[in-house]
Image 1 (cartoon, rainbow, N blue to C red):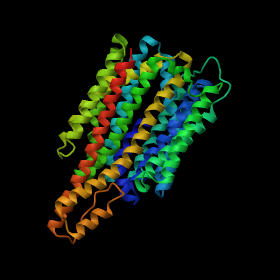
Image 2: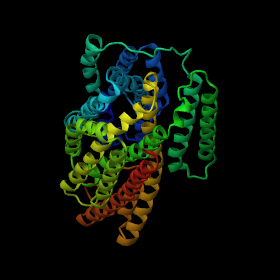
Image 3: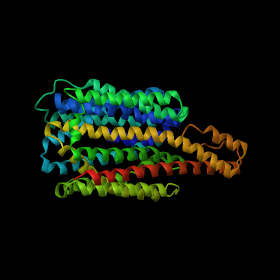
Image 4: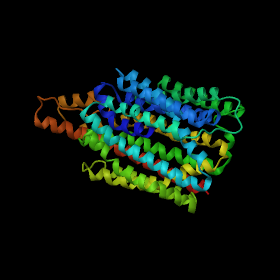
Length: 479
């Protein structure tokens, strides 16, 4: 449910922005409201599973997620959609870490890599099937209908949980959950993300932008202070005394931040710039899902046999090469130019995911697997949250500069210049009115296409650099 939702929403973003008559910043919040709530509460979700029972908390998360999905599908405006997405994030924060912790509770350390490989493969199939099914729904029905997939999936999920999953919990019960820590990290991340997104419209020198970023940073420092003194911290800082645990979470930050940024922007490129349908855009991710699903169990066994270091260096390096290739081919409208980088990216991620997840769980005591899983998932989510916030603001600024450069070169008519200027602040390709001449239509299309391609090219280069940085930390810190 969670992986389908994350992948399918990205394909629908261009249609949502157009249908709701809103801006790129609103689309950033459609993603980030979900990610913010999930990031802030993932750690509580993992700890709650350890304390109250992983199956119980998992089922609560599934139920909340399903109800929030219905609210997303019925949302009358961007504000209601963003609020419903935030509630989805709450549900995801409870179901994701507990699902993984249930696997860890069943399988011993020697079998865990292969088991998590199966989990990774199933997740990859779900994530890959989501865009093509959701894209077809967006093209033929409505983007609202994509959210109705989750309530349907929740029914067999809950039945399987009741019928087949055994309850498990921490043997030494915690005194309480760390709600002060959760509140401080939620407010801190929320303030920082608000400032980063607002910078696109207000500018970096605006007092609101700088004030919220400073306040958010201060709240995150308060969060660390709370965790250090808490008797039941949701982030036991002692876990980071393990070089292995710290290294794999730093790798997660860079790798998943880059993936989130890539998957946020690529649908705009494929659908708007190159004119493919939402279903065709979703189909580009199918080879990614098939390869990831087929190789994940093999990758888990590879880690069991050879250890984590080599897969966690080689896999991210291949992923970085894939993003470089995608950047280079981003201006090429041929379908194969998008499929090929996704195939390469799938091989890199297939080598990486199971060893990464297994290393996180093996680095901690059995009773702390829920917390460890929550920390690692939170690292991935926070990375995506911050990268989308930063790169959304940067992309809008770069797009304005690209518009200016292209218009200086093309010397368009006043009408074309007006349409281009009207598109500033959003991420929607301007369209020529019906009464325009063919020359004006071609001029507007060339300016717009070149500007969007140049902007997304820069974004993808930054994403590739992040992945290579993650691989370098694996070299330095993973044994």
